Image (cartoon, rainbow, N blue to C red; front, side, top):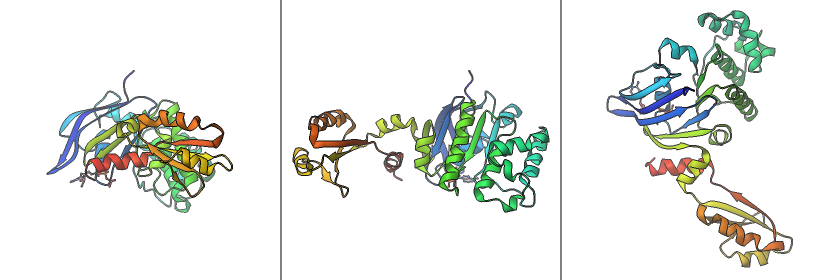
Length: 299
Ligand SMILES: Nc1ncnc2c1ncn2[C@@H]1O[C@H](COP(=O)(O)OP(=O)(O)OP(=O)(O)O)[C@@H](O)[C@H]1O
């Protein structure tokens, strides 16, 4: 099966600024990949290249097997810009009918598309009366026209409340399950952590990490946290048995260790038997991993 997106050793310069340097990524059907990086890291530049909006200096890019920006690639790629603007006087339905006409698709699909993004009830209302979350959904409905194989979403959840974010990702999960590939950028690491398959971290145009979250965890080699809850009346005993542990305000004891020490320490804690009521392993979060890779790169 053809990969939906292949990027190999991509380099792009704007005068003296190296916006992307030697970046590679492959996106298979149904995969959701998050593009992370500080402001100016090169995320939008990469998206613009994939969309065929700007040329690049070196490397290779194919979108659904075709050159970015070619009619074949354009027909299979959808884009949702960070701040999609719509005409406030148009209803949701009118706006989507307009986009359908531009894509030469039947206008009758408009309400169905709005229904897919949870806007069926508001399709007849003017967009000027929509909330930010509803406008984002209009953007997504627009992006779904023609059943694209690749969705490129630039900070799609910025400004959305937690429930709208969750709904938005649930929608993306459904699209990925149907085979669409999704490349999105976000600054909200907690949601990316839970809702994407792979993560690419850019720093000053360079790819500093790429992989699944477990792969990034291994590569970052950050310490693991272990929280141990003493059984009733066993707090002191447990503290004596675990001298390296620090008491937390909730009464639990906290340890940190290197990844390769984890199993040994867990075995030691389990051997303490009835003195332990519970224990929890706290792996480094994506935020920790992201900070670690960014720091290494001098950010
Ligand atoms: N048209 C341009 N002309 C000159 N420099 C540019 C141009 N577009 C981008 N750059 C530079 O390329 C670098 C990467 O910018 P880019 O917009 O891709 O970053 P980003 O990761 O999307 O940032 P943000 O999170 O702020 O959107 C920056 O140094 C930026 O100033």
